[in-house]
Image (cartoon, rainbow, N blue to C red; front, side, top):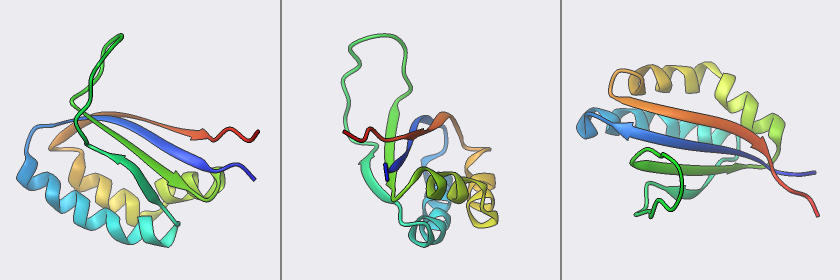
Length: 97
């Protein structure tokens, strides 16, 4: 079964307040088996437009990735993020060779 991924590009306007979001998302991420592959590391933009921060999170399956996003726990964390960050996020199924 292919894994599921969140791929997000984010601009954070209040880094101190964003820390509350990061603390709040830990429980739903643990519950749904999330694993960070990229979490705001330095990046080089080589094409197109992008935001300052890139995050890639791996889940055991596409269903787990979607369930995490839809969960009340994550939506509560997202409510902390929304006023202090702007982002784009996709949930995508991984490649299975």
